[in-house]
Each structure stands twice: as structure tokens, then as C-alpha cells.
Image (cartoon, rainbow, N blue to C red):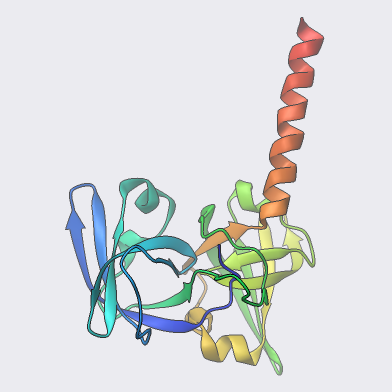
Length: 205
């Protein structure tokens, strides 16, 4: 479990295809990582498979590659990092599972005096549970949905602190981003859809 508060920006040192998956070695400032520890890399929960001086290695399985843009990463790419919550940590963002629900695309970037607005085209599984002032995770960053300017599009507002301490300042129109919808919204959506299916079955019997 994570909060979506990025604690470091890592740099991809190396990418290595392994069978159907991919190994990523990432340079980072964490001094005390342990084997088997969970780290959110651009919002995806991955397991530390090896620890090296100044970094760590993770294995991205095929199912994760299919749901993320990790296959597009190259050496030198910057990624947002967050270590898993421990008991007693402050929940400063929102409850983030580290499960990427889909990949969105930046449609528009608008600079403002006090920050920046990003319009993101979101896949249906994210768009249908995103509401104004609700929560969404973008590349591992806990954010508030500023508005829903069009069907299938969500807008987020980035303050100077977020622009300075995450990779979201690098995002431009056309860039792809990892999205995780709010967990509560996903559960409510799933329960309502299940109820509708079961109700439909009952009416047909």
C-alpha cells in the first residue's frame, strides 16, 4: 500500500528483456532497501529482486508490461519512486494500491502563474470512476481531479512543489502516463455492475 507521495526520483540505469518480461535496474538515493521490498515505480508496485550500490533491480512480468509503458523505458529515463507504507506512517495523499489500471495520454498542457494544468485522455476503466475533486494517481503521484472537461478526459492541477519534486514537469502533449483510479470508486463501480448483472439474470429467470 502507498500514498502517492513521491519520495525520490530514480533514473533507469539499464533495461534487460528476460523471457516474456523485463528487468529494470534503477539508480536511487534509498540507502537501506531490502530484497523482497515493494517499491512503487511510476505508480506500479514492483518487488526489489536485487540491491546494488546506489540502486536496485526489479522484474516486470508480461502481464504488467501489457498494462504499463515500462516497455518504452530506456536508460536515462526518470521515474517516480515511493516505498511502501509502514505502520504509523502519515497518510498524506490517498490510499494507492500500486496497481496501474491503464495508460492515459496527455492531451493538453496549460501553464499558469501558480502551476500547470494537464488534460489527460483516460481509458474507460479510469474515466468512469473519476469525479471532480476525487483522487487519481498519475505516474505514482497522488492528485485531485480538477475537472472532467470532456467524456473520457480528466484534468489535474500541478502545484510548483509537485512540478519540482516529481517527473510530471516533463510531461508534454502525446506523452503516455500510468493511471490508477481511486480504490473506493473502483469498488463501488464493481459492486454496482455486479448488482446490475445479477438483477438482470433474476429478471430473465
